[in-house]
Image (cartoon, rainbow, N blue to C red; front, top):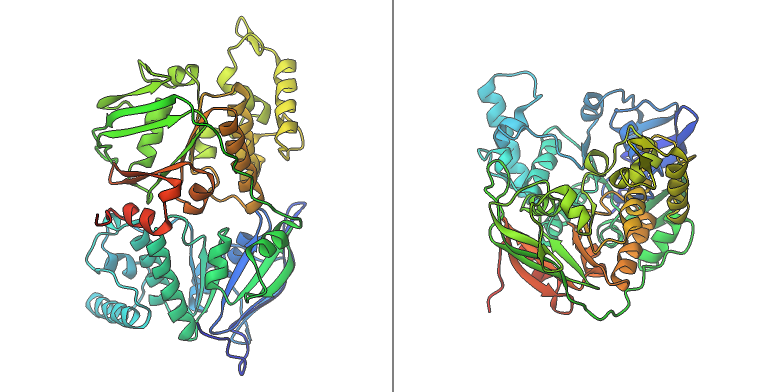
Length: 509
């Protein structure tokens, strides 16, 4: 890996960066330096100020106080165009591509000056140079919409390099990659550092931060809590404790006797259309077990979750709860038969963000006599129930009547758990349950799943985070192009085996 070049000024210096949003100070006098040849990890809990700091560097926000210097010279960054002109590129968690355009056309968007043919040749030449230097290759004439998630990310990185980035910011870059794709990305980042670039790597995956970075800066409550060299003396546990300000221990997974089948998917197929079609899905979840569903985004996991929520009707096959087919398959029947649901989109389909937190917590049961009578709500009963759940789950909210949309991601996820676990579900379906959550919030969610398992419920966790699945699950089902490739007991699972199956590759017998 490249080493910092100390005989010249740092590639980037951010000094005393402060940013306030009303009464909230998101960044409080933050200093950050990045030298050529360095890969710096930026860590912190949700709300610690990482994204705000990077948005200031990339020109999305103006800092209230502080200075930025690039190559030792003062820099004014008021827009992303300013940032790009100064050699700062950013690859966001959600990619900004035109799916109906080719790779080459996406790279040409925003390129000014010169004739079309000249620009086209210039970019093709630059793509060849990037391939040779960093090992990043794409077919320039492939449609962006046909690329895998890993290839789309590669296109975003190539786009930043084509535009002359010498400082590259990566926000949760491996969230949807297979382990093999993540290794390929790390190889490219090391080549960039070796070629004198500087990289800022934001991730909640501490083992990846340990693997790829040279130095780690940890933010806590808008300030720099620590800056440490990533060497043999730095451990994942130490980084987690610096992030959270306390000791962090993973929840204990105790042995549980597996009970009868509580959920069965029996030959589920869908027609597909504009979505990934499911092809003969067969899967069982027993009482007292957690089954994980692994797969790269877009291989049918969302369709599977929608079937189990009762919002998508299969073309063939049945869903059974405790041996009884759910008929008709509807959200009301699924709920009545005991499926609790933590949807992937917690703000879109999980909670109604414009309603009070208390209303969201009782929403599925609002017609029950305890909460309403003859069509009239019982506000006192709703408030008492919500306050009890808010207290039990440690949800940070000023009051039960606060608008749900004002809560942080971790607290929104706790609110969903508080609601769904209140009714002792026979089966809990959780899709991407800790996406975007920090170590502390993710640990809380995992602890709730393991408690549910101990109580004899079945849990189905759909996740793109293999660490999460290996920590929680008793068995892992791997999906590829709408099929279940294999269901592996956790004792027989390895990251390599699961990663190959996620890419559609079965190991030779």
